[in-house]
Image 1 (cartoon, rainbow, N blue to C red):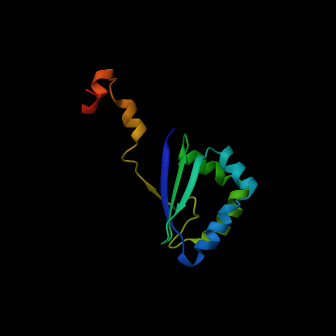
Image 2: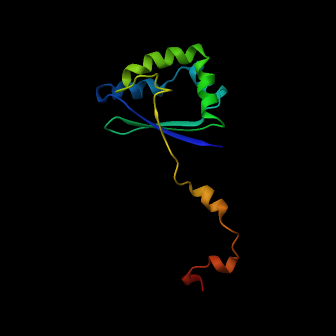
Image 3: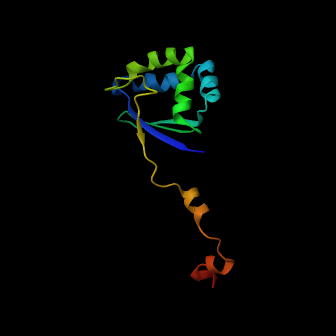
Length: 125
């Protein structure tokens, strides 16, 4: 499933409240995210306010459009917008998406099968 990583900048004076709000996200928001294709969704916050988000979804545009059709998302985004610096769009549309340049499991899966003797280390021989 495609992986998505993005960043936003949380205002440093609002970081504690941002963390508190995400410790108990509204149940209807959680369900809407799940129902619209946001899987394995995580947020990470650095001490300077850099927020990194990660999710897996078959289609990010469809997942975003699905959320845009929900009332709960409109309410959540309106409340969350004040936590971010330099954001002209709702947070779920204004993030900076990062390009994936490496994924261990993808590269391991692409390796040709090896015979048991070719995987031995010098100590094994």
